[in-house]
Image 1 (cartoon, helix red, strand yellow):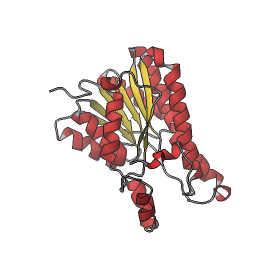
Image 2: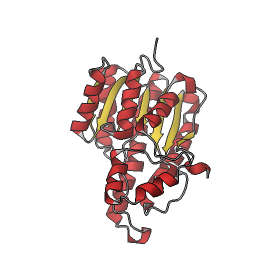
Image 3: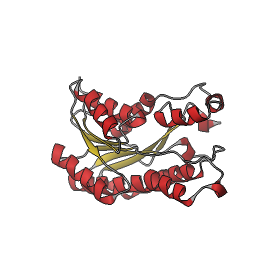
Image 4: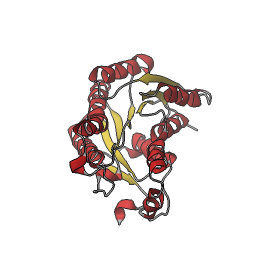
Length: 255
């Protein structure tokens, strides 16, 4: 039985761990050939190995998504390897560091978060869309966040701003390319059990109970639950879906 992405070529940034890795594994299981992109070479190669040892096709590209030349080269290498690009999950991102009030946030910290989380998504879309226009279509899913839909008490102003930006960028691109066969959507995860959140909780263990309590479903999410949503949005089953921000958040923003 063919998978939902059988024969497709998919690119996943930030695929060395967490949501990106889970998405790459789900894409492979659904029949896609993968390009694994990340700054973390060891983690990226591990993701490749997890795919290829189960009979899938995957290759790793080390990339800094804030650098246009590297992003352009990533897309070129994808096409050289597999001939096209059908699906892209722009997932690479960072959290806010340090977690301080807005007026205390250093300018370099603001720039770092915005560069990776927002500029990085724009650069990836810029070159992905260029390729998809040449081949007649494709599907893009950007990782935003519930913090791209609501405000936050968590002292993460740069992160919230970046993710609100991703939501706006997604909707604008969806409208600009709707008649070109390119669908652009975003997934907005709640708090997910990833290395990023684990780092935060290790430094602030009292936060876990507070975070869980804000999810009506009574727990944090799993990377695989986000991956399933991304795979559906990239599949032909979602052919009439574009400009959508899909919340996968255990009811967080419904309150």
